[in-house]
Image (cartoon, rainbow, N blue to C red):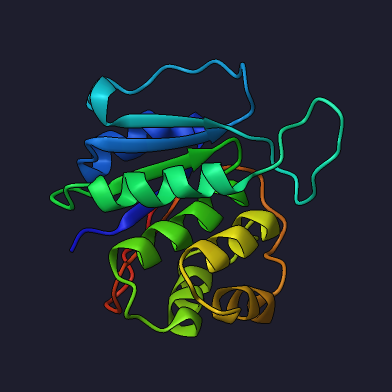
Length: 179
């Protein structure tokens, strides 16, 4: 099964072409403009307008909500899995890693949360999955706190410059390196 590519916005075209992605999930602030890579079919691209915050009630910022997580789950379950799924946010550090975990569990729910999160950490020393997305995803996928606990166990990722895409294997295997 192809993996999930998590990327900063600045490298989506490169990652889509390099990995043969045909479907893309964008988690960006509402009104943030960008160009969808030509290899991504317009009908296989979902944009979710949320900010990278972990709590509601912050003025004009949009915190992740249950309906946003359900969109991630539905999109992942409809992914054809013939090619890697590209997920991106602004920096590729918080929203997209959280969505990658949710998507991986949506398509392979029988896997161990801790093992999945450890694969995430191996793939990216920088990933700090958005806590709100993780918490909502844990509930929506009936993980009973296992996903939240696993993400908390790896702690905050290293400081990042927003230039470190990575591949998250859905199932255990060797991790390819992405430059």
